[in-house]
Image 1 (tube, one colour):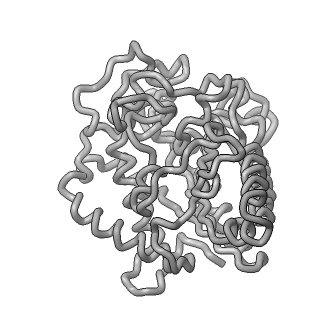
Image 2: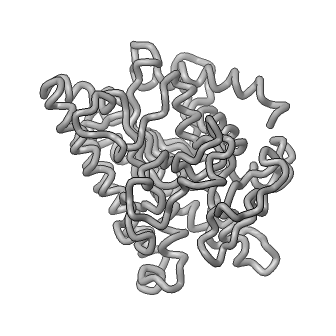
Image 3: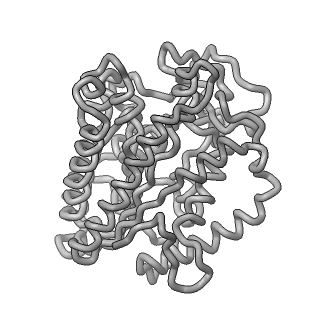
Amino acid sequence: MRSHGNYYCFVSSFMVVVILMFFGFSEEASHVVTYVFGDSLTDVGNNNYLNSLARSNYPWYGVDYNGGRATGRFSNGRTIGDIISSKLGIPPPPPYLSLSQDDDRLLQGVNYASGGAGILNDTGLYFIQRLSFDDQIQSFNKTKRAIRGKIGEEAAKKHCNEAMYFIGIGSNDYVNNFLQPFLADGQQYTHDEFLELLVSTLDHQLLRLYQLGARKMVLHGLGPLGCIPSQRVKSRKGQCLKRVNQWVQEFNSKVQTLTATLNKHLPNAQLLFADTYSTVLDLITNPFAYGFKVSNTSCCNVDTSIGGLCLPNSKLCSNRSEYVFWDAFHPSDAANAILADKLFATLFTSPSPSPALPPRYSRG
């Protein structure tokens, strides 16, 4: 990780330029507006404003963030979204629930992500309150109405068409739904049936975002969920759960096909599917190659029987930069830095002005 730092900085700076060229931005990166949708991997504090059991606005979360304070990010430091925003030269979009509808910051980008959220509305039900993907889309609809009231119908339409939309959703539909033996979906559906439900629901949700003006969308695929600490403890030898990882790969494949279909049928749609599964798996299986020492358990000594989050009375590892995982579910700040760099490198692999999309990448 540390030995590769200069290389990743170079790649990331270059990729920022290319991603802007690809999406047709003629203005400077500092003028790019981003809207973020997702779950706890990108939540920057929305759940602080909810009566939710999925919260991280307490120590030791944020111990390596600016000022060492807990902000509601489910990490010891930054999220991947924070790092991507930094690469674009813009501040991280603020949490939606921290803003009023007359706040001018709505025009500069908003983060709607919510810990525990999923594609399905019943995902994460036991967290009590969370913003499902449907809730997040409805919140964006309210944002658009507020923007329309500020700058008018045509300007608002142009604004939404030109913004970038980052979407990372689906992990909880497995970890906090289908894989939970006491919840209905895992009992009611086979995986093939559940996968069809997920993808068909996501199809309608992406179409709804398109109807609200979203054109330039980046969908972040799921990582190897069978290798996160909360799942490895289910193995007698602490190994990755192969069946879970197989299901995740099937999900990613279906979503990649979906993005290609939407690009083909929706005028001016530019949906990109970023499949970083192999990158995350390599980080977990070969941690030393990236400067890490531990990838099979978390830096924070968590109790997976009561949720797997890092509590104020939890014991921390001595060197947080050596661990891939912060708690039972979420990467550490150091791992997020690697993954954010890799995400850009995965999106665009050619040094030519026109980005070459690898086979795992679908644009239609």
